[in-house]
Image 1 (tube, rainbow, N blue to C red):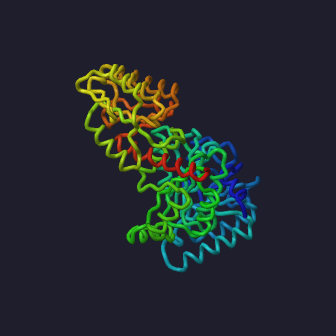
Image 2: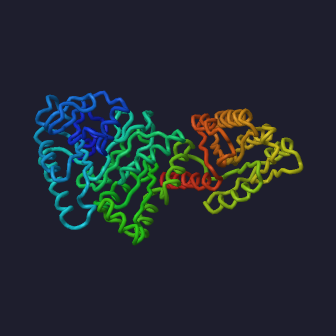
Length: 462
């Protein structure tokens, strides 16, 4: 079976909800998610006694559904799952998301044997299964989601997660920074569709430009390594791999029943195939934001511009620790800076201190930024600051976007929590292709991962 077998998961024309509860119970989120996204295909609730659920006509079984069913989402009790899967085979369902849990994640042979039976039924019935113990698909362009309240705006990030709740959490986190998704998939225990197949599908998906993953462990490690090798550096692939310590391995096994592997093994694989590794959800979002907004070019020569002096020094340390270099400024740039900045309370050496008065006199920030953006020896500018009032901050932000658009330079803004009171003012930065971080250290760490990816891809093409 190939990648085309997975297409229906992302673009189903009709969906059956097998075991949909009448009341507000956990499984109801699937219907609420479809309603919230505005899914415009037929939705068929399957319930043994209900005639109607939330305005949708209900059916006793899949056999009673009059039309075709592209995808079934099964949330029925564990003891009924095999019968539900057999019903999918009779109905010629093409794809199944299996939400029900209580299988291999519990440990022991029984759960693994049950999952092997699931796959056997699916193979005989000609359909694929994502799950069990998963939340399935979020694909805003197709108007499908497993949670209500997720953004309806399609984007260019594909996210694969063994954890279902993490889909909800991460999509919301990214949405607050105007980072949007092509697809997000919670795949759980992987009784059938495994991580490597989903990664392969996203590599060939035109709507997905950035791939990221939360991974506890894999069933088919050889398959994943093969896909990484065949697609190395075609797209950024950012992985948050957990379960690398003894405690983490035990937790991963109890969560999704997966085999984790040692941290050293994974690190070697990531290094060999240009995978970008992150260590937590904060770093995952920061790194996605860098790839989402910044150009994939440059050699990592950065200039740090700051109103407060302390963060500039700390940022200089962070640049070196992340294998970036402080750019050497051209003589004409230095002369421009001397004309812009007052001689006291400032510094024209990189990192550049524009002085605290810059929050009132925005020309100190913006004229400095404009001069640096025209320097061919500068790849990226990290700017720490803002206006002293909301009105000045709005002017400051407009200036950043204007200079970025004129120069095409990578500009990265730092706004300490509380430094800019109205975070809604930051929206033009995100829409203008300028990522915003809460500290220069986070900004430089994320940018360094983009630079590393660019260097590896450039070296491979040489």
